[in-house]
Image 1 (spheres, protein in one colour):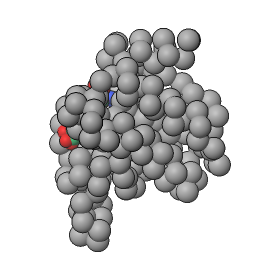
Image 2 (cartoon, rainbow, N blue to C red):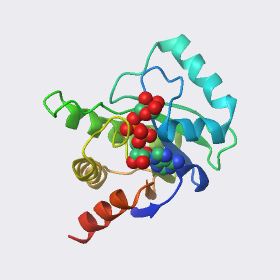
Image 3 (spheres, helix red, strand yellow):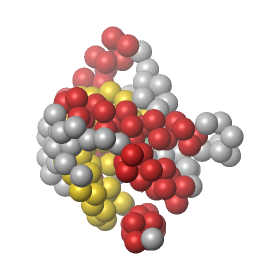
Length: 169
Ligand code: AR6
């Protein structure tokens, strides 16, 4: 499995599956979630609404899959990261579950290339370096079935540097 770190906008990079850092309502929001819904168009929200009607809200650490609408991808996986409230509320386990669940859903779908944003490290305030360490821990121990390439898309220079430093060390 190939692991790539890039700096940029996740909505612009062609892949099989884009992972979205959503919230449990699945109704969209700011940050990368807002960017994905804007670029993908209303088909994404329409499918999120169907999922909500079927199963209710999406729990923290869990994920659901929808169309990618007009995005350069086949599907979007919406995963709900934990809000950082000090670290004593199972935030680490929940963040790892986001990555695990997203990889499993992508493999079940048959995706070869998946892109991840830095889940929870924006509005949800998860410490960036710890989040990067946990994401790499999950990805390195995950046994890919179909997946061949994982792209971490860092929006800011700091996250990009953190990933590079972790991978170099
Ligand atoms: N491409 C890649 N990464 C991005 C982009 C983009 N276009 N835009 C922002 N990021 P955040 P969270 C980065 O806040 O912390 C939403 O309102 C950003 O710099 O998007 O998981 C949801 O609806 C940061 O590194 O997500 C939830 O309510 C990372 O994406 C809540 O925010 C995650 O930041 C989720 O908060």
